[in-house]
Length: 237
Length: 305
Image (cartoon, rainbow over all chains, first blue to last red; front, side):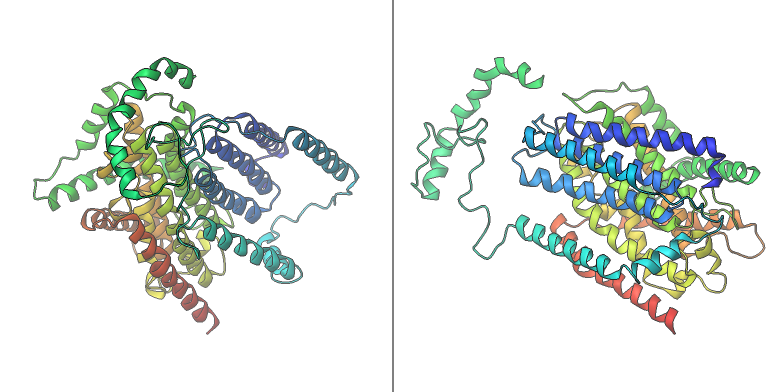
């Protein structure tokens, strides 16, 4: 993109975008909420898209921004939907499987660094008015069509799977029948409004009975917040 | 360099006066349709003054950074969207070969920003607005993408400048009659208006902006109007021939067409009722999306013929 300015300016933008990509990629693992992590990742991808635009790959760069914004939005939505945290704003531990992830991280870094150092990058600058968009289209619908279409169909199958998983209606009835929310601490009682006091969530059904109990115990559950008021500042922090 | 400065100056003028005029137009339509007398030209400034003198309230444990970024980002994306619109032959602030895709990137970032605006305050009504908007805002983008690709087919280019040039003989709104109506629906969604206002609606006491006050509220409303200006300019460029027109200078033609699109969007937003989310989802996926496929198919067949 000679339009932006001289070589110095392009270099400067490249370093700024790279720094932003690395910083936001690091933030993904340091923030404590699914939504923040999702959009930190989005910022990282957008910076990489900007670098692609700098390298005269206009379409790939812009399409990266376009795709990543949509994908990260959908990803955030699905993560919140499949997790117990209804909003995604409450702090939660976002990192797990420490040993495996550290190992994978080191492996990935070493592998990619080796690849970067060993690859013989071509050193032939593009002519000023080369239509990279047309080249890309011919490549995608020509030589690379099989790869491209395989990836496309795989992604489509994934999407159908995700929709089937998140749908309430299913072959074996509604997905939420008999479901109980997970506990607030490991092995604890199910979260949410207590229908009756003192556990005993065996198998005694009867929907009408539950409703009666819920009405009876309503005053009790209203009292709860007052009793636990001392805990509130802790939860804010 | 001179051309860039000229185009940039035009962009700032276009955006500033566009925002003001959109606010006036919105007031006129809403008051006329409810049988009240018209509003003055200074009403938007009075409203802004009221917002700016109010104090800025905080919610409990908000995400301040994202809250601020969502408002600033919405305004910037509106300006960036307007920047790809050519004000004359080869007179666009951002001259990209892929400007239609660039506008698509703006559209998808808008959904993210509106979501963040509702998520960051950490308050129930704005959060409901945010999630509800994502459910509608994402699928309504699909028809808009297909009608934009259809508009790009006669030009054989993804460049808005080429797309305008290809409408020299016939505007896309005539060549592809399904395109503009579908794109206008996207405009309602991007600017959170009328039948597509699932984010900032009255039933949620303002939705994502329920917790905005003072300068934040003023900023968000200005950003919504700026988005309306940007969207209208893109719509008139892609479907109404942009700066093309006889006698008058190109920029004037673009302004006139933008005003027409803007008035239509505002008029629709005050006239149409809003459906429940589930029904709207059904409408988008089962009816609007196939119609946009038809539009694309039509454009492709015409190109082959």
